[in-house]
Image 1 (cartoon, protein in one colour):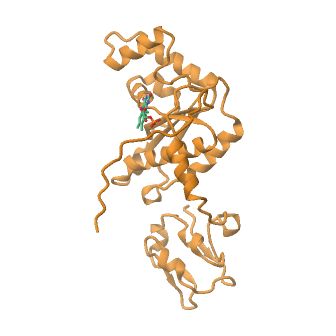
Image 2 (image 1 turned 135 degrees about the vertical axis):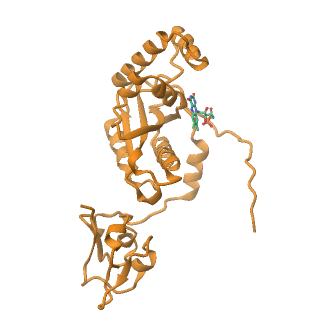
Image 3 (image 1 turned 90 degrees about the vertical axis):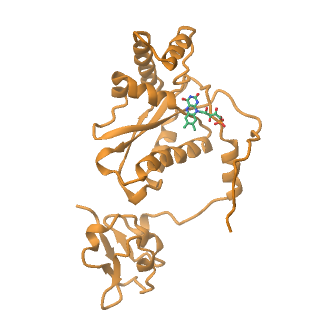
Length: 269
Ligand SMILES: Cc1cc2nc3c(=O)[nH]c(=O)nc-3n(C[C@H](O)[C@H](O)[C@H](O)COP(=O)(O)O)c2cc1C
């Protein structure tokens, strides 16, 4: 059963902030000015927990989630964030070693905080977390490509590179995260955005911890073309692969930022 809100009536100061901020407007005051769901509201609740997050006195809980277990809000330093965004690079050279367990744990722990349209619980993440497992993926991928009777341009390029000892698909990375979307829980328009938002957050957080990352269209393409490769991602059948990022400890470092061409930005006033 879906969790619902509970109110600590001793703590509630009747400020109404939870009512104002409720995404669907499904909270109202009862006769004693404590928040409760309007009739039918409980079943509509998307579990965004804005009510718990905004309550100044910590009077609202959501199922087993209570304010004591939340982190105080903090937005960090915007200059640091901009510096990270500017410094982030696509990394195609990785060290041999695996990503440390603690780093993997932190990355996985960040993922639930990404925004999704409608607060849908609609994503599945498959993380190939060791070089051994990545090597198994590489082995299957290139064996299948070698055996293709009529390879496409991309497959031919990958095959030729492999014969020269180059892994142009996975770039020798020791780890890869794939995001898949639940086919049964699509929210119009959001199913394309949600997975990419998730991996964008993942990339920045990973690079902030000193990891290299590479968005990898080639890995998505080959997984969709070759069922044996797709199977290695162990994505449950109700989900569909959307995108992948390779990651690992970088074997290179960049000394300075690039100087990109500007996009057209029109300020409308
Ligand atoms: C959605 C997306 C898919 C990408 N797919 C690949 C890929 O399959 N292989 C690859 O080597 N680079 C891939 N890249 C990396 C881009 O080529 C890279 O962004 C470009 O080289 C610019 O470098 P920078 O990210 O360091 O600014 C991809 C990037 C994005 C955003």
